[in-house]
Length: 219
Length: 419
Image (cartoon, rainbow over all chains, first blue to last red; front, side, top):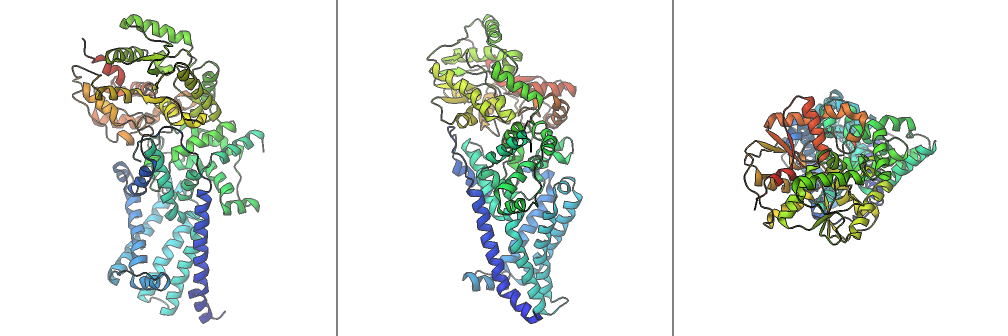
């Protein structure tokens, strides 16, 4: 495969393959969870499971005071990089054009300076998160190969996007292709790793909140 | 593979449901649960990180219930769970977890870790990796009827003493009473004043009640050790007695896990709903207060604080009632930092107190409670669980802290209006 052919492949068929793996993988993973089911609760309810579940889906995004004090860095860095990823993914004008082409949906973009600054902050937060994972006694103890792999495939689109936008190193054509390839890598890895939490956390929070809500507890 | 390991792994598989799968799928190994666990915060040992205590169960989930895990297993790329590994995990699952569920409140992706530990214990017990102390307590619960070996004559003797003390008859086996009171062995042996306190309150409030001679034990070692068949058998005894005496409600006493066992797990263990209600003694007292049937006089002037038993508050939903009751009889009630559903465990719940091997660890874990107490510096500590009470007294003594531990029900009884 020649270089131009590779570029065309990455931007065409490869993107389609990655999208299929991503979507199919996510659906299968969610199905694997739900198919296990759970037994009905025969104890007399004190509160509403559904209300408790829905409450926790949202409420768990806000940490309790004690945890915020004890794990400040973990929470702040986590919030920053998650927010940064969503902002750059959803509000960068060229990304919105892509969504318009593929999904037919469009929304206002943020100024490129804002996206640029967000990208830098997000990359710094992700680097800090890696240092924290290696340096923190508990996180280092819990970490496996997958945790570092997931970190890598998450930061790559941010870094390659930044390089492409600023046209650093290679031709713009090459840079954008590498950026797209890095996103494809993220999409392919996604269903097989803890990246799945982006979807499954809603299920987990719902179950947690529902079991507590049934007993009249806000969890 | 040995037969016991096979039984254990089979039990793990049986215990994995959609919630467990969603929890394992969501963990990002952020480590926040460590800071929510008193066994970690008071020892600094990362192996006490709550989610790590579930590692063998997680691997069984992955190898049995995910496409990639099954594929890896088929081609021999996954590491099977071994008996040696389960032996290593025994202390993590039983000694360093009180099922307090604080981690389940903190996990950012919403994992109910305590729910999973409870389930993992089923496999650990089936694999023969439960602590000696808990095996003994469970055996006594089945054969004698009480984890501490308390038999009916011992209860009747305590009832006799109480009747003499308070000059009142304690109803035993009264058919058609509204309420059937359960007791924990700890109350019968160490805190029999509880029986007198309930008798006095109920007499004033006009509550029709009884104790059953056939099922007076409220605790359930089957749940703590993780053997559902035994847990169901212990629940069934209470159900049979309640039905025989035709009571409308069963009262769970001042014991955390007893409430969780009879109120929330019981019907699920025996596989059918009850035809009576289950109330915690604090719920009933608060109801009596609301109805104007619980009248008190005078207030404690000393500085009181309240320790929430985990299974009553966080895992049970009885949070406001004790506060309403304390405020009836105390003018200087102060809350500890992080209280109610975010309270810190005493360090001895979930079977830890029945497991002598964990004695040193549970006293180390008590330091978390000490830190909370050091902030509010109470004159006395009120709680509503005999097991917490023993642990609190132990911990306070160990740390040379002179703070009496009071039962909330007994405190209320001392303030009953004389008429």
